Image (cartoon, rainbow, N blue to C red; front, side, top):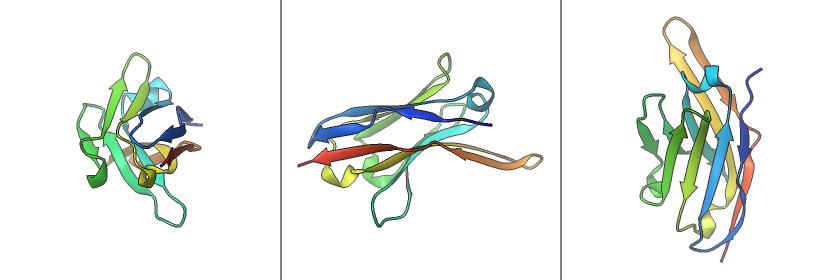
Length: 120
C-alpha cells in the first residue's frame, strides 16, 4: 500500500509563509511525478505544482512566483514552499504521486490532505 504522509499545514497571516512536506517510499519517489493539489470549500481540486522525477516543475497559474516545489531524493520527500500567502490560498492541500507509461498504465496516489488557512 502506497502512503503519502503530509505535514506542515496550519494557520498563517496574510503575507506569511508555510512549507509543506510529503514523504513516501523510495520505490515511489524515484519513479513518480510528485505534486501538490489543493481544494477550497465549494471548489474543484486544482494543481498547485508538481515535479517529475528528473526535476521538471509545473505550477498553477496563480502560484507562479510565490510557491516553489522541490524534491529531496535522500529523504524521499517533496516540499512546497509557499510565500506571500493570501486568504484565497486557504484550502486543503493534498500530496499526489503520479506515474504513467504505455506498459504499466497509470497509477496515482493521494495523501490525506493538510489544511492551510490564511487569515486577513
